[in-house]
Length: 222
Image (cartoon, rainbow, N blue to C red; front, side):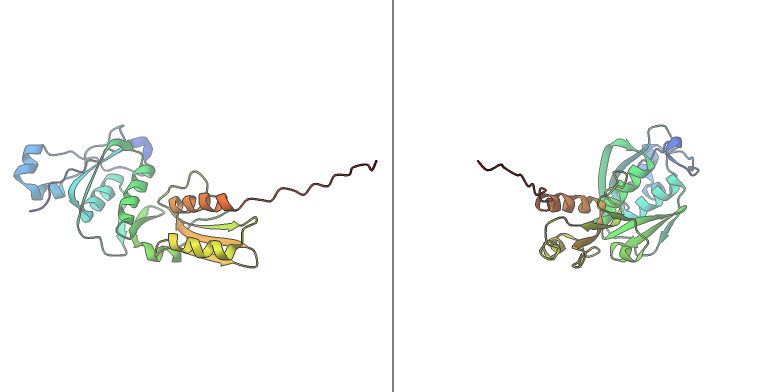
């Protein structure tokens, strides 16, 4: 039996830069009587409350379909949609960037994610993300980069040796990520989600401190 669809999306008009598909919901009684119809029903009409998630026993295919219809962003499926169902209920409302970030964090548990490119979303394997034109930064990540974003960070070290650190950090990255040691520059290149890169930066910072400047003082002889 197809799980009852309980996903509710309410999209803020001010949160989207693209038109939103307006629609109406069926009442609960009709949905219960005809569960198959609930899969095809349109998402609720936009309100000022933002996007709300209430997934109970829904398939990934249903969730992606609703997200696409609600945001008017078509999804190009470059990889197979994950199997299984999803239970995720949140009381809060999300802006479009927050909703996409939250959905990606759920998808990443299935080793896939949505990549934004112009006016489309691409469902892609995490392992393939390194070949894409992902954001690249030096030294630190801007606060505006969401934790679900796959990034490349180049980090010059101050005093620690890059070899031992890269060996330890390699155990912390997923199969889709990488840690590269640049011995000549004593620098690291990290490829991972922004959230994981931030965690690794905290670890690196705890052991890679700049040495205090040498100070020379002259004392008169007596």
